[in-house]
Amino acid sequence: MEFSANQIADLVGGRVEGNPEVKVSNLSKIEEGQPGTLSFLANPQYIPFIYKTNASIVIVNEDFVPEEKLNSTLIKVPDAYQAFARLLEMYNQMQHTRSGIEDQSFVSSSASIGKDCYVGAFTYIGENVKIGDNTKIYPGCFIGDNTQVGKDCLIFSGTKIYADCRIGESVTLHSGVVVGGDGFGFAPNNNSYDKVAQIGNVIIEDHVEVGSNTTIDRATLGSTIIRQGVKLDNLIQIAHNVEIGENTVIAAQTGVAGSTKIGKNCMIGGQVGIIGHLNIGNDVKIAAQSGIGNNIKDGEIVQGSPAFGLREYKKSYVYFRKLAQLAEDIDNLKKQMQSLQQ
Image 1 (cartoon, rainbow, N blue to C red):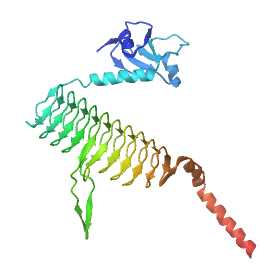
Image 2 (cartoon, rainbow, N blue to C red; image 1 turned 90 degrees about the vertical axis):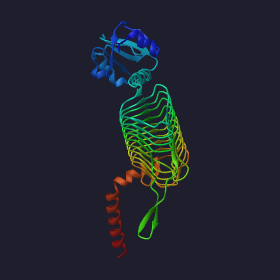
Image 3 (cartoon, rainbow, N blue to C red; image 1 turned 60 degrees about the vertical axis):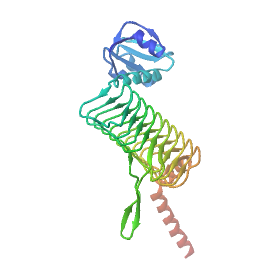
Image 4 (cartoon, helix red, strand yellow; image 1 turned 30 degrees about the vertical axis):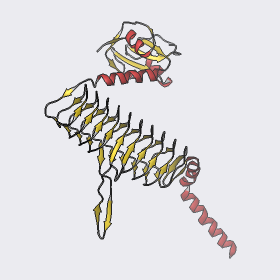
């Protein structure tokens, strides 16, 4: 589809400077802009590219004043990055307008599928499943018995949702996500382990996004809960009975062990390990590759393994780097003291 500068300006509440009828049909980075594409300029470091780009339309901040002649039509808005992000979301939604149930998929006769839904080929939808309006389930997915999926969800190819789970509205599950697999529960029995049945479920609230190949285990009893607005990166492990508070974001390769409670508005870096049965407060920030073995209070910023306060960590790191020299200095002092004593 093609859009004119005037149409785009109306969508983002902007003002056109240049040819209002110029049209675009694709998006581009400003340094790689080609004719017929729309780009944006938000970071001052990229200003030199606006004089070289071939993008037909560029969204800029209201206060941008060109110092050289431009080849592009400008759309001026209060916040260029925010406006372009809004357009990206609109473009993304246009890519998911398909509907209907494709051949070679299986939908149980007891399942309920809402309006304008899409079910791709080789997808299995079990008994008593309820799918909300406008949800898109791409090929090769599995939705287990008694599961509920809200409206406006995107479930990408290869996702598996086990029985009895609850998925809210406007949830995105990327390829390879597994929701509701068994928690890691085993009881020692002499020289072996007996499996402890995991009979709970997973609840994912509204506006959650889960990255590719992330796994969220079902509870032993009760529910593993992902609160609304949570964003999980790729390759994350969430264990049984964990609860993650609203609007918390977690980066890739992090693991959260069983029954740990994480507060709201937390930011957790990549490759963080959190042991089980902890309480992580609200507004906590955990630096990448930290190991968390104790409870963390509201608002704390921690780093290291085992993790401790960020300011203390940075002070200590100065000495970590000089540890070999410090050890040598101590040995020399010992020798001097021994010599004096003799």
